[in-house]
Amino acid sequence: MPRTIKRNVPFEEITWVEENNESLPGVNIVVDMQRDYSFGINGSHIFGYLREINAQQLKANKGKYSLGDFIGVSGIEKAYENYLRGKKGYEFLLVDARRKTIGKYLEGQTDIAPSKGKDLVLALDYETQKVAEELFKNLSGSLVAIEPKSGDILAYVSAPYFSLQDFASVTSRKRLNEIRTDPRKPLFDRASQSIYPPGSTYKMLAALIGLEENIITENSRIICKGGYQYGDRFFKCHGVHGSVNVVESIEHSCNTFYYKLIFDIGLDRWAKYLRMFGFGSPTGFDLKSEAPGIVPDVKYYNRVYGKNKWSKGNLISLGIGQGELSVTTLQLAQYTALLANYGKTKAPHIVKGYLDGTQNIYHPFNFKNKEIEISKKTFDLVREGMLRVVNGNGTATRIRLPNIKIAGKTGTSQNPHGKDHALFVGFAPYENPQIAVAVMVENVGFGSTYAAPIAQKVIKTYLENLELDNLNLNAL
Image 1 (tube, rainbow, N blue to C red):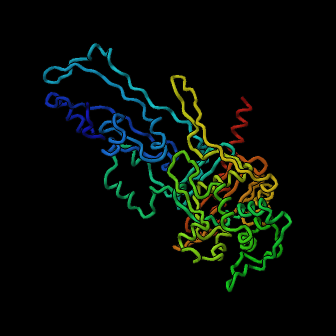
Image 2: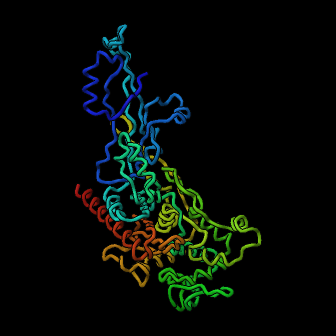
Image 3: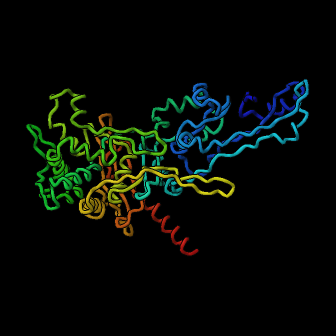
């Protein structure tokens, strides 16, 4: 069985081997395959990279690989390794006593031709992905954009990212150490593995619970005098909103409304609904590597603080999406897709299917349906509040567009280690949602200032290209 001695051999060494071929029996120069990443987008956390197989992987995949083979270790390369790798071919040669090749055995009749792996069909929209990456060029954070009905991931960014070109061939130890020790942690996928409090982006879910459980109605009102008094402490709101109903509470992001509401909902009932919407567990993401997040309930607090050693005061922070509640950007994107499509979507995925055979027959993958039984009236009220956030007198009016109705919600996630994180979730067009987006920008401040404008540009790019594609199809 042939073994690889060295890769990426300089031209000078190749010529030396060829010149001394007679003295190097069994040593051959072989042209190998190499990944090419010069296609205009980075996608490092999407595509992932290959690495030469190690002893542990060889043992786990006995008979499937040989020493010197490459195997996917992250992203699509890892998750879809079995589709991508293909099968090796074999060539049988006649050699003399000095192991010099004479010719092919039986004129090549027993040779086995190699077969390539499958070509994967991705859900990514090229222009949308490109714009999203450009917007995060000098930032840390993440973005996930989903087509609400199908669960197709249209754009997926974790920043800072790394260059896949560094992993296209042999990666020097020096370069590998530079990437691994970079304090910005570019190898870490912030979109599916980092968890943060969702802040005010979570308020629509609290409103849904209150409406579905008949705790509030569309006509229920509370008086906001700038905050909420609990015991001897006053928890502030963003302003003095006066009398607000549920739609207005979303529009103006009234903390007071949700401070009160979570006490009426109760912790375990609150946690049940959050889990229904996919928080606290993996989404079923096809690249598999994702954090479940944290949805605290009574058992959680008893375990962390001790039974009877915590109070209802812990709920105050949860009421506005802070405290122990922690989610991923991917979960927020799925949640937004559910709001956009009235409680129906599919598990989020980057790969849609594969092409097979000489005629490239398309085989779509099937992804798990996610459906939540919430009344249309409840969704309509919450969606109206989101519409007003952008198109009324809400916190994201600066991203309003003349020809696209965006519905959304800003959020600011408290960060004990520095500046707050900025968040935004939204979907568009309001009447027939084609894209749902979740944006999280680390250590910058308000969601309305930093995250919302990024979402707007991504939404605008996708919908304008979609309209152009439809016009071209109709022209045909």
